Length: 178
Image (cartoon, rainbow, N blue to C red):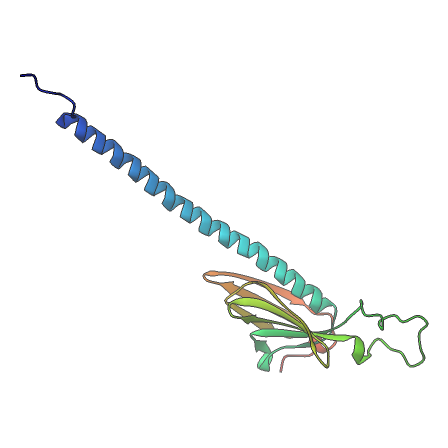
C-alpha cells in the first residue's frame, strides 16, 4: 500500500509558521510606526492651526478700541472691542453732523475663550450676540497682560503648547495691569 504525501513535513511546517510570524511582526511594527507618524502629523497640524488662531487674535488686538484682561492682568479668555468697518454706519454717505468713529452702533465685542475643548470666538454688539464660531481644538488658553501693553497668549492642547507675545495698539491696553 502506498502512503499519500499530501501534507507538509515538520521542517516545512516550522518554516511556514516562522514566515507567517515574521510577516505579522513586520506588519505590527508598521502599524505602530504609522500611529506615531499620525500623532506627530496631528501635533504639527494643531501647531499650524494654533498659529493661525494667534494671528487672528493679534489682528483683533491691533484693531482694538479696548482690551479687557482678567483680574490681575491674567485670565483664561480675551475680550476686545473693535469697530465694525463693514457696518454701513462706519462711513455713512453723506456724513451726518455729530457722527464719530466711537458710535456704539459700530462697536463689536470679540471674546476668545476655550469651551468644551474648543477655542471659541464670540462676536457681539451691545444688544445681541451676532455669531459664535469654534475655531479649533484647544484644552486651555492663558492670557497675561504685561506692563507696557503687551499680551502673552498661550494655547495648549494635550502636551503641545504655543505661546506668543502680542502688542495691542489700543490706549486702554497700554495701562499697567490691575
